[in-house]
Image (cartoon, rainbow, N blue to C red; front, side, top):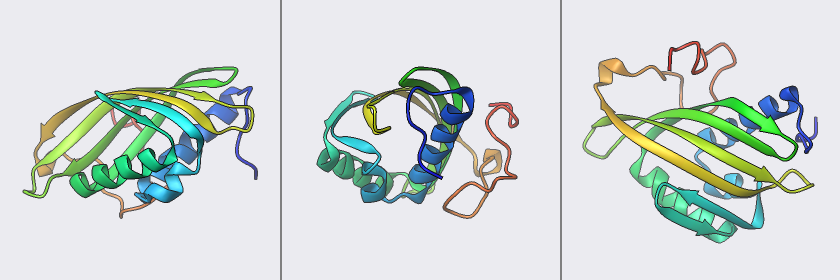
Amino acid sequence: MPAPLPPFTEETAARKVRLAEDGWNSRDPQRVSLVYTPDSRWRNRAEFVTGRAEIVAFLTRKWAKELDYRLIKELWAFTDNRIAVRFAYEWHDDSGNWFRSYGNENWEFDAEGLMQRRFACINDLPIRDSDRKFHWPLGRRPDDHPGLSDLGL
């Protein structure tokens, strides 16, 4: 099935969000970068990234720091070529300290369905290992694993 293209419906926007979640859960910077335009512009927290090479470098740094990363994204709103997403991900640092990071993203797509702009606001919450909610094996979240709303997040 081809990737969803704008203008989005609720069904195609939700599918686009799940495909993005699956890509990020691969923790493969090169693979993830290919869904963005060659000149894609990001704001991620206070960092500004432009283009696929910078996206790959950013994600490489991110996943070297954020170990055992597991992410869930959920559609918040959509229109035409834009999608708003809320997300949470769990990870630990190299000292074994666990965090749950919460955030919102605003996405804008070109006519071919590549993301040309991404704006992310993220907050990190230290958690105990016993407070973790994302326990699937590294990689794609299983279809039967609860989403954010189901988990009360």
